[in-house]
Image (cartoon, rainbow, N blue to C red; front, top):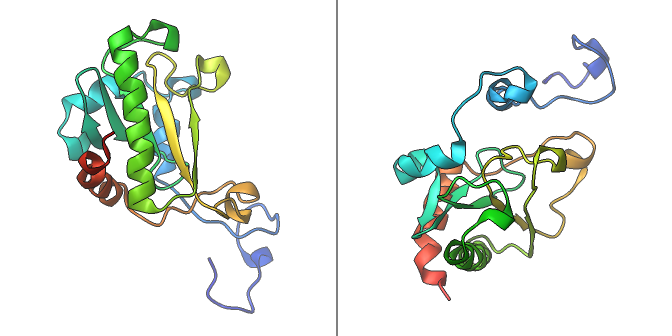
Length: 184
């Protein structure tokens, strides 16, 4: 970005469209790793995460059948994923005992996020299959996205960019520390 107020975006190299750019080069790792976009196939991230230590796997909490982790590419700060350990693709495939824990961990994620971040609401969702928008279609996962009044301003809507005010490791540490305090 320019620091000279007399310099306009027309003076910057590249295609001119009247918008300043916020460069987010870390997103390229996601784009390049996606086989649908020509990347090399990788192992399942939801099978790999619980095999790592909590900080490296971004794991917030572990249960008997499921775990909760931060989304590596969050929509909002604190965007959590509730995942069964079993590598199953659809909600219909999850075992009954795992389903009960899956639901309980989703509720606890909501309580923890509300207490730790003061969010005003949530988006909950599961995209079943790549045609439905699942980035990892082969492993069931529930998104728990905290929302705040006014969090959708021009940045994500017009600039198609998210501004996240906290590092993932800081968010994971805060939510992990608060997790047990918000059990049902």
